[in-house]
Image (cartoon, rainbow, N blue to C red; front, side, top):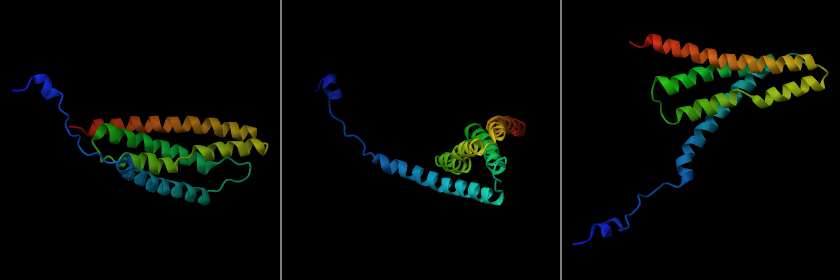
Length: 153
């Protein structure tokens, strides 16, 4: 007969674990794929709607505003409406929408407007993008919540 204390001191074998890179490889892959798709869409939009020197960068403005609106809808749907596959959020949220929206181009556009002697346009663009993007994500999330609430029995 063994004492209860001796039973608890036995070494139990640990279950085999995957290396960390194997667990993260699918996430990295879907973020990369989604990012390539989002960045390609953003680039295509910038080619279709080029900015004139000193002009308001409408393509980047609308890319960021529409991307924020889609993020608002997506985050409500994925977090409040039901469960999704574990790779949906990294693929679409981080990858596609992260590649589609662009803070770096926004910052470069502002700098170029200031350097070209268009500080008023640069400051309007700076404020308008921030206000419109925040409003878009809030309005889209609010509207999505209302639609989901309305559709529930």
